[in-house]
Image (cartoon, protein in one colour):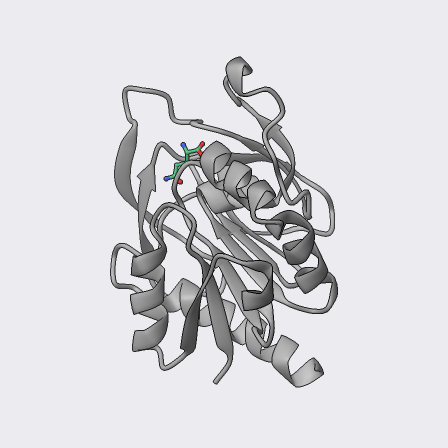
Amino acid sequence: SPTIGVLALQGAFREHKRLLQSLGAQVSEVRLPQQLEGLSGLILPGGESTTIGNLMVEYGLIQAIRDFHAAGGAIFGTCAGMILLARTIHGTPPQFGVQPSLNLMDITVQRNAFGRQVDSFRTSLDVAGFKTPFPAVFIRAPVIEAVSPSVEVLAEHQGQIVLARSGTLLAGSFHPELTGDARIHELFLTMSHRTEQAH
Ligand code: GLN
């Protein structure tokens, strides 16, 4: 089974670890560039994207993760992690300036897209390829406002894109690690497995 790293700087990394372990994957925590060695896939968890991005810069992880991806590594960004994958980020509070990003996926994201009133909510999503709806928890979630033609939209919520894939990159607005439904992690393992075989 593939070895998956979970970026463990801040946010919901423990829940991802547990879910991946329940699927029989080998899982390790990533805080330093050398911990990317030997991984087939990497999960960027939810949390606070400016905080995670600043820590990534501090630990030399921006270039290291870009290199990991260029060498064939699959990456799954959830919520804040999706923001960190995007080429264009809207809605960063002005006091943060330009927030650090991996700048890898051809998507434009809008942070905190659901506003204050519905800050956090739970819903059922129709996901391309899934036979039954997926229970999704949104927590101060971003949405994908625009995608390039090479990006495949996998799920929408109220007309806004909330799950998308492009090659070995997967990005979701919500927290798939919180509901016990492992199908999105299984999909990511499949994406990572292909990577492993290609090595
Ligand atoms: N609102 C957070 C951000 O913009 C993301 C929230 C989350 O990851 N649950 O970074």
